[in-house]
Image 1 (cartoon, each protein chain N blue to C red):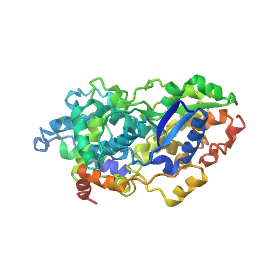
Image 2: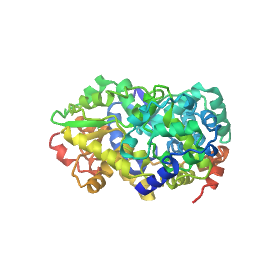
Image 3: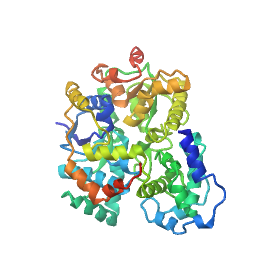
Image 4: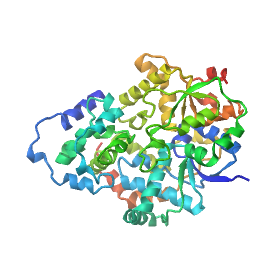
Length: 291
Length: 183
């Protein structure tokens, strides 16, 4: 019987392009006795429409929160864009009566009402605060002590502090600590809390490619064998776009980018196939010899 | 894209001379009534936002400090017609660091929302909106990928309630906003 139970919010990017994150997360969470309840139905968290209509974002986010309220379960999301948005809207509507009334007017059209009875968490927060390091340690059967990696949290796991605020955005430690639990060494590098630039792809591609190239350079200089992420959007930027960055700037990186659950899963003794490592764009097989 | 940025720059921020006839003195009050824009009047131009902005490091044109000042001045048309406002990546570094507690990324979002009201929604956002209305999701996920979930032993992706999507688009007035977008 699982002690921890969450409504699993998948979002759009993961089923669209990043199934390796979902596959590996489900494997490790099951091992940690975390029960995931599937959402019978959901919609986009709302974040992509915030730039064009704040009200539409609020309505989409609030609808998802209402679906969770109906189930009486807290939400856990793998995508920081989703967890950040749902968390922010949940908090704002709980605190601001007038805004809540306005959003509830929209929701009335679909027979729903926001009450503010549930909580929203990201995977990193669930693993750190609710599963706990002790429980994770018990599942490590194959410590990755030969591996040196770096982390990239992704902005919406950290900021804005006013709405997210479970880790220190200036010196985030949660993901680092989670990485070190696997036995791998997590190296520091320059500007590690900086944005990958992915949100403006489509409006402007040059700047995100330059930003990610700079980060990949810092990661390479730090001597890391892999980069560990917890955001599907950042992952697309560093993994799927890595060959494009290499071509654009005539540089070679070849840095595998693993979702944190893939790293944890390897230390738990899962096979690379179980964790969908072959789905990564940048070949990760070279780090497996260190595993 | 560099050209578009340059064009936006000459249209929006590079013209040094400001004519009083361009100024809408009520603009800052309008922004301050939009969630996220409340504290726009408190910006004292310290430049922390621009100094800490990762986008500004790689753009010759995107300067959040300048956009805050232009907003306070009321250079409404220059700002709203500029491509530069669409360069904020919403990393929220400026929001965390602002000594005056101005939610700079929130002001940028308010400016974008107003630009959209004027029919200036970028194509990428029009596509995202169309996808959400048609599928409930921000991306059009191909049938093949939905089928592949079975092979991957993943539960099926539920079909979103499209009737609710249409109703929310209408209730928020966003359907009307979409209709007035220029090509």
